[in-house]
Each structure stands twice: as C-alpha cells, then as structure tokens.
Length: 216
Image 1 (tube, rainbow, N blue to C red):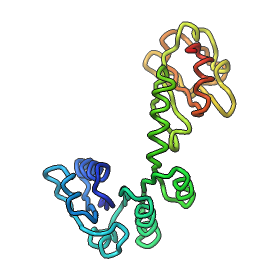
Image 2 (cartoon, rainbow, N blue to C red):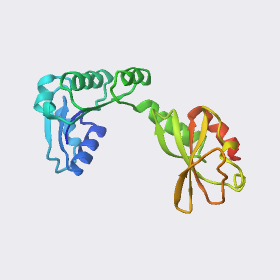
Image 3 (cartoon, helix red, strand yellow):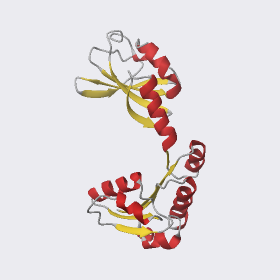
Image 4 (cartoon, one colour):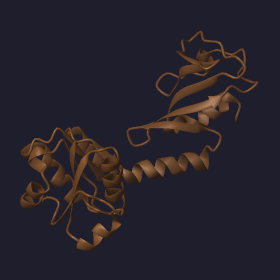
C-alpha cells in the first residue's frame, strides 16, 4: 500500500516505521520540520512540510494514489478536517483518525470515519487495571466500553455452566479453550478444571462479573 500520515509526533512516527517495516510506502506530513526528527533512522518515505488538511501538501504526499490515510496530529480539528478531505474529496479507500474528545469521536464515527478516541480508550484501560486487576483483557471494542476477558477457571467455577455466568446485555461467555482447542460456549457448557474462558463484558458490569466468578 501507499499510506499518507498526517502528523509526525510519537504516534505518526511509530506508525510510519511499522508500515515501512511491513513493506509499504509512506509519506508523512507535518507543519513543524523538527517533528521529522521523531522518525527512525533509515526512514525512506517522503517528508512534507505543511498543514495536514492543505490540498497541495496532500497531493505532494501522494494522496491521489494512496490506499490509506491516517490523521494523528495533536489537534482534533486538524485530524477530522484532513480525514474528511481524504475520504470525501480524494476518495481514499481506508481513512482513520484520532480524536481526543470522546463525544466528538462518536459523531465522526457515525459519519463513516473510523475513529480512535485515545482519551477514552486509555482511560478505560487504566480504570480496568486499577479497579479490576484480576481480570485479564484480551481485546477492547469501541473505545473500551466492551472488553473481551481471558481467565482460567477457578475451583469455584468447575462444574458450573456458562448460563450461571451469563447476564443478558452485560456478560457473556464467548468461548472455552480446553486441551489446546477452542469452541464456542453455549448456555449448557460446563466448566472443567484448567479451562480458559473468554468472556465479553460491558465495562460497568466488571464488578458484577468478579462477584459471579468468586473473585470478590
């Protein structure tokens, strides 16, 4: 792919490094030329000094042939304007943007632009570690509102069924790994010793899950 990145801070420079490492061509735009010092030594892509939503800068970066565009500057307005420009004017197939304000992020997500709300995501991750250290998170959906947790069956759970843990709209046992093989759980799935459970849970229900599992 050819990828254009708007913003060359820590996220943009890391993204540029990882994309080049995978064999893609990359162009990075930033209004501060000193920001390009964040790029790792050996970066072979284009470095364009300019505003990320300036059409000339975007064209110089190869936006007209780009397969993807990521806007990761420190400003929400710059990110969303450049993302909309890439999506609606230049018709870039894959566009993603970072938004700090969680309320605005949801609005732009509804407009069809995949959005990472870094403040909400980071806050939810830290809250989980601080409030529920016994629960191991494998994956977060949205901005962390729903998590996929992984845990080994405790002695208290052996012999119980998935239906004993499931709470409609809040908690659901998704899969069980037993003897190295995984299968989807049903309400009647009975837990055995050394089972690894994957459980989807709404953030606000993590405390309830801990009580059901005997962790609290």
